[in-house]
Amino acid sequence: MKAVQRAELLDLAAYEQVRPHFMARVIEAKRPRYVALGPNMTVLFENHDTVLLQIQEMLRTERITSEKAILHELQTYNELVPGDAELSATIFIEYPDREERERMLVELRGVDDKFFVEVAGERAAVVPDRRGTDPNRTMAVHYVKFPLGTASVARLRSGQGPLVIGVDHPRYQARAEAPAATLQSLKDDFEA
Image (cartoon, rainbow, N blue to C red):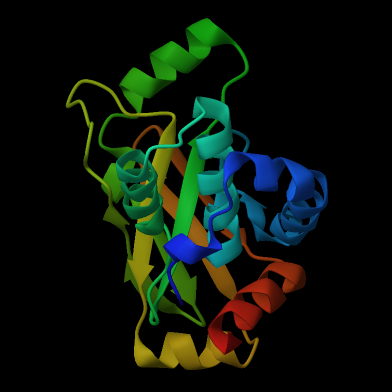
């Protein structure tokens, strides 16, 4: 998949003009890309457009205008764009109660490398982003990649599944089969 290019990024004033329409389009496209992983985790499969939105919103929120800072954001967020034979995801650990969330982030330490995907039974282990990790706790947001085998890529390109996302940690185990809309969205990514 093509990384976000510098030429695609709009300056702050130009982005404000298109923001409502652009956000609405990308948010709608993101809907089928979310998969609940048990009661307290959500997976968002990333692609070029989800990353482009994140970059534009970061530039807007932080009022970033210097070229050096723009290029830094571009480089940082482009790491979320999946490669040709992989899936990329952001995994959110969600506990509404603050005290429970803090306790679970400690109890879930080590979860970083416990995620996996399976496509038609072929398992792909996670490649976690270990920057900013703390051995005593985990983070509430994980950026991960799943390198896929040839058979898995072929099945996703044809829109076939099943695609299962899972986590196998002593304190949290869950598996979820991606719905047809998610498979179609990922198929569209592989065709792009």
